[in-house]
Length: 187
Image 1 (cartoon, one colour):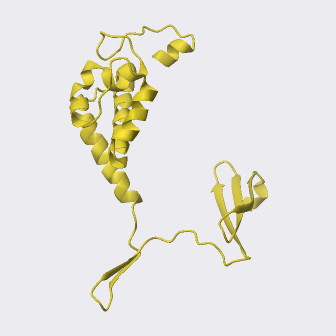
Image 2 (cartoon, one colour):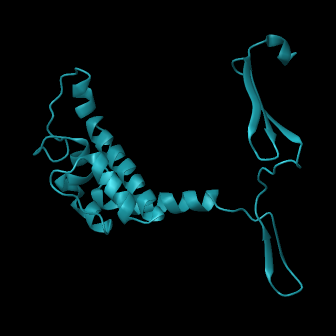
Image 3 (cartoon, one colour):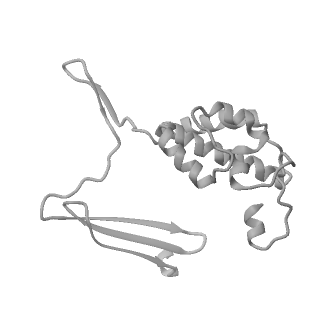
């Protein structure tokens, strides 16, 4: 609501969730009385009465571990989703579901993006050997590596092509990308 008001839109600046206080980013994401259950779950985070949102986030980066900060960001995301649902008359999300949903989403994300076992075997010493998914490897000294990629949008007749050239230190020597809409590519 605050951003709409800044853009000259006529809006009521009272919080749509609690209908008691003026809405600000800090109120919408942390101070709204409807978020009391959410604040209880996020340990180690306190906000002074007059702190601005940027300062609040900055203080969280020094107080929280990386995974706790990730969870906090997902909680903010879910709180905004919940508020937008209220603004657009969608089904309401109960505040008690905000943190469990964010925790579950974070776990799913971490599992999906963590190391993938490509090959797993047990060595002669009984230690399990796991090979992670392949990643970019630099070329030998005084050599260059060229990587390319392409994407095709058949429905619109578009092709995107990209190239990057790197030296043995991984520094980019040249790169280019091009979009082509030439129909002859489809024949």
